[in-house]
Length: 298
Image (cartoon, rainbow, N blue to C red; front, side, top):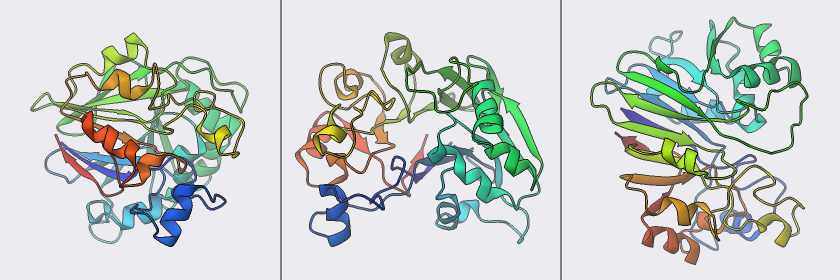
């Protein structure tokens, strides 16, 4: 199985257009070593790399596809992209669906909660359906689903208390993570870009995976308030912080997973700076920081 990180930043990308935090200033003026990033999404394929599946479709999807020849059309009309799996209904994970309206049709895997939000809440799927056929594949946590030749996935529910922006969404299935498995080797990837708390049940879902791409939104829980950029903490926004008691670094470091990689990284997070003490701390604990274009063979 092959995984391509199309985007590794949280909503707004890095730098974020309206932000002058230390990290955004550094990437603009080159004063610290760091790399721009687009909004988070990944592409997955079996070993033949002829068919690809997206997990989430960010607003940056057009440039992400163009930057990766593996997703380019074969003959000017037929693409290698087969379907999109959605972890949630957040705009930074779904607005890219509208940019795919020129296709002959789109297959979308989503829980009932996410599907209802995108249909009657944000209206994204309703709008998309006016341009191209959309096939909805219901995602049922715990069910094993074949995903093309050589791949399968199972989703797991990720409880969240984040404020519901659009009415009508069920509490269960608002956010899910995915375990994608190579059916030949049995090795798997877990993709978990949004998690509010790493509970024992969620940590159990990670057991046995070969690689983990996990929520790295903020380093500190009070990161945004301390910079005067927002009143909400990381947990308020639905994301477990990396540092501190109960943070993801403490809980993930001991897990026997070959590669543990942070993604969905907010522009305020100091791990975006290659020379930051926080980045060095991650490396000492065996964790990595995703960058756009990273490829992983599993």
